[in-house]
Amino acid sequence: MRQTENSTSPSIGAAVVPLLGLMVFINYADRGNLATAAPLIKDQLHLTATQVGFLLSGFFWTYVPAQLAAGWLVMRFNAYRTLAVGLVIWSIATAASGLAGGFISLMLLRLLLGLGESVAFPGISEILARHVPPNKLGAANGISLIGLGLGPAFGTFAGGHLMAEFGWRNVFLLFGALSLLWLLPWWAATRKLDGKGSQQPDISPPPLSAILRRRELWGTMMGHFCGLYAFYFVILWLPIYLVKERGLSMSHMGEIGGLIYVIYAASTTLSGFAADRLIARGFSNQRVRRVAAVFSLVGSTLSLVVAAFGSLQLSLACLFFTAVTFGVGSSNVYAIPQTLGGPHAAGRWVAIQNSAGNIAGIVAPIITGIVIDRTGQFFWAFIIAGVMCMLGMVGWLLMIPKIAPIEWSHAAAE
Image (cartoon, rainbow, N blue to C red; front, side, top):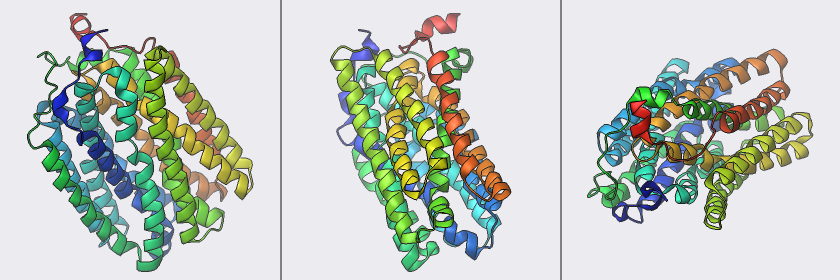
């Protein structure tokens, strides 16, 4: 095997990857609390579904372009410190949202939230690519991405109950204050780390032009965008769908939504470990990643389309299965570019990929809001999300000929 596949730095410490998972948990709890509060905010601030769609997408207006700057920051400076600064910014934005007086002030704070959270995935990928070999990236990503499901689960379940009892403003203030507590164990675990794998050779990162010329990059960008369109449709509109269209109470919505996200979190973690186990038993990294991508995208397509036609019970069953299929694909989304980019390009690669992919966070809420206002229901919103999942297969399967580390010295010379 190549050195990049075998070597790993023991200096990372046992606590860093779990703390990355906790950070993603906080990240998604804080960004998703607006979706949980949306049924209340919509009525109290007298907003249309289209205005709610703009608020839900506002986070991504800064999150998307800031990804490129974040990719440069985590490679130019210490990734550990960059993550800490970003968390401070988004925690302040979360708490201040509880004081927002209307649409404009809430939108401005969502823009600030997106700016702070932009450092998360470039920073995580930079750390994991430098310290974890490709054949173990499934488990490492599974642990660090468990917050993708548990964050919304906590935000929807606990947030839904707390908002029903104390109001959405107090919950925003509470979540923002609690988020800052993560800085204490993070500082203790990383204050002596320099952000570089001790066994990695001192090679300059490839130029941006070399990365942009790679067909694989454009494949991951397309696949990520299509998958995130469906993901953000579910994560951002699920509370309103369950309360307004299906007639559930805020508390019942919190219980159902929380369970969906817990299933998603379990699927993310277990599928990551399963992928590594299969690779260890002799299956190729490429075969395992491709099979996971096909299962995730085909399964998500079918479950979302069936949910559009079903009764409440069938729709909920489909959403539970969607949580499973989303989870199977989650670790792939970052394990593949971390493998392709390697320790010297993963941070910038994921920043570019995440920037393009999260454009879905801008368009999905707005398109969904417009569709709901025009049709008065969620039917076509589900269909569109399912079709987007199927289109994602073009990126992950057809545009990436081989899932293996790229020799950047050769690529730069070419």
